[in-house]
Amino acid sequence: MNVLNMVLELSKVRIASLATATALTGYVLGAGTIDAGAIAPIAGVFLLACGASALNQYQERDIDGLMPRTMNRPLPTGRMTAPQVLLVSVLLLALGCLCLSGNQSALSLGIVTVVWYNVIYTTLKRFSPFAAIPGGVVGSLPPIIGFVAAGGSMYDVRILAVGFFFFVWQVPHFWLLLMRIGEQYERAGLPTLTAILSRRQLARVTYVWMLATAAACLMLPMFSVANVPWMFAAFVVASVWLVWHATVMMRSDGEKLAFHQINIYALAVIVVLSASGFRG
Image (cartoon, rainbow, N blue to C red; front, side, top):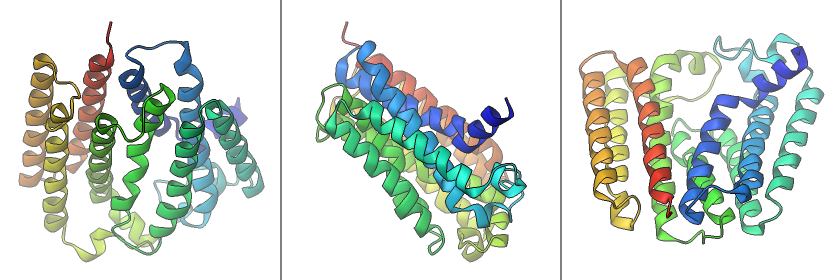
């Protein structure tokens, strides 16, 4: 049981589950239903997300031990060795690729996602305080993987619009977290916006990105996504709710609440998008 618990810690299951949910949304949008064909690609996305998270902890083992948020992970505490963590990550990634191997395009996108996260984003974090912006690409790819696995084209404007929404959403999602723990990143020697911007300035930048997230959602019906009146109404209600909480954050130190609200908002959009994908 202890081994399983450590693997789950390495896998960051909650984050992997969100990526899996967006992949499932993409599959429903592409297939118009949920069927047995969804099992392998969705499992593949989940395993790749878990493997990428485990590999990230191997890559950042020197940093994790310096931050209270991460110092209790398996590697900093010595509960697992670096070779063990690397082995777990490779196995998870291999299983994920195996699950996606039935669709070459989905497999290729899955590999691109892992490379983008573990090579490009993880490297940029050590050099740029703006790494979250290119890092947002990681959030945009799982729904496209699901869509392609269902037989859709990765160039379909509908799924590109959905991917763009999750790209925009991921940036304020990270910066809201950064507003809470930025000093930990600074302590670990990572470049961070909290070191070059005042708290008020960072709140303003994050506020603009939250507004952009709402705008990206409201634009989805323009690309034939959720273009049913009640679904658009749901987007409007959810977006007004998000903008309200973003405004409250600007007027007070409410970044902790806003962090939870923007995650709830993403889940609401996932539900509506999934409902819009069913064709019978």
